[in-house]
Amino acid sequence: MRNPKPTASAGPLTLGEALPELASWLRAALIEASRPEVAARIEEMPILSCWPGLVGNFNVGISRDEWLRIGQRKGRENIRLYQPEGVRPRRWQVGVTAVNGRPVMVGVSKPGILRPTLLTLSRKLAR
Image (cartoon, rainbow, N blue to C red):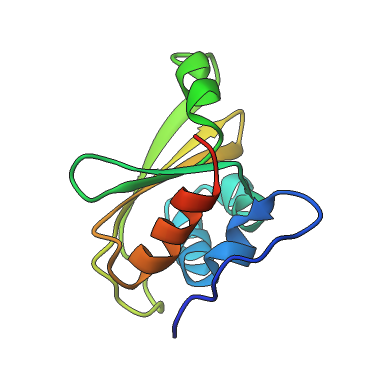
């Protein structure tokens, strides 16, 4: 399944709108990781920024400046996710950062088929 190209909407794009396959993969992986409160909100996570990393990874979510400000804020947690059962296997390596149970950032290594959409997002959205 190819990911649709991001389209302009009234508000910020959400992860479920821009990257539906990744959003459903994340939801299943977060439920398996016993994080249903984060899973319930992952598809509605706004994408305010997207930038490529140095080793072919991408960061999607809040702006880079806001990311630097949350630093070691209380309630911040990094969740490393693994391939969930019952979902099409991908070679993605994914991590989610949540603050007080609200997902704010997704990091994707080895994005494979997501790369064209992530590149488009990174060109359209400011850091």
